[in-house]
Length: 303
Image (cartoon, rainbow, N blue to C red; front, top):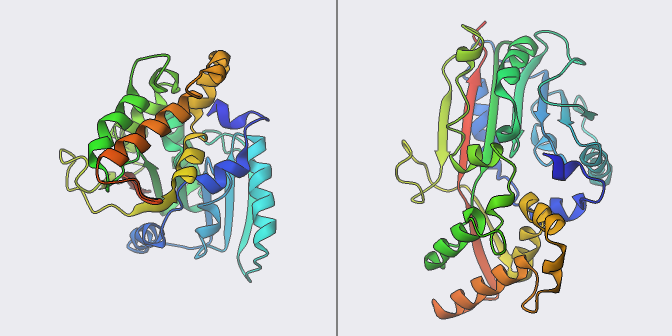
């Protein structure tokens, strides 16, 4: 995603403002991998790794490589890893600057697990599936997941306001027109637009498992599971989260005069509208619970 690759993008703020994936999510992926008769735990890769949040959690694997097209993100991931000061015997983590669709530094049939958190909607899957077919061993697993539009379960009446800000068409009061396409549409539609691997590389993969941890928010999705991604935040934390959105960065680049708006810049106007709505709908709390629906696709290498 182009915004995250810019040198002025604040990766430190991004890392602390975004939700943290629960252990339950990783265990779900590891259990899926263990069910493969050919499962190995030698090497894993994290595509579009960003600051390495998911990379460092792949602890069952002896070597883990985070991969990102942004040199800025890769450098931040290395710095975060150094600060963790965790040394594990027989567990090596490194980071590589390259695109997900071109993994020339990896040998054929060398990877046991591929993951990607909040990045798969940006991939070119006509190139991604052939490259995965090349690098994954027989029986290897892949898990790609995203979280979509946030919800405030304590204030369900605010959902239309959130949707209008995120997906609206008003170029002055919504970030909707500023999301990069078609990636954002793939995310909003819970990855259903990602094709079957076998439609691209015949016979290389088993049929995808499509998993939806979306709770009651999207009842039309098949077999929705309970929400697993949530975070308790202050209102200031929530504003910080809004400021990590790539669409907002694009909006600010194209509308520099918005910073002079007498009611505050766009994200502050939205934040204030939420606070006002919360005050009317039961009272303004110091901390709020934020939930994100999660969609995941699971793949297994067949040959």
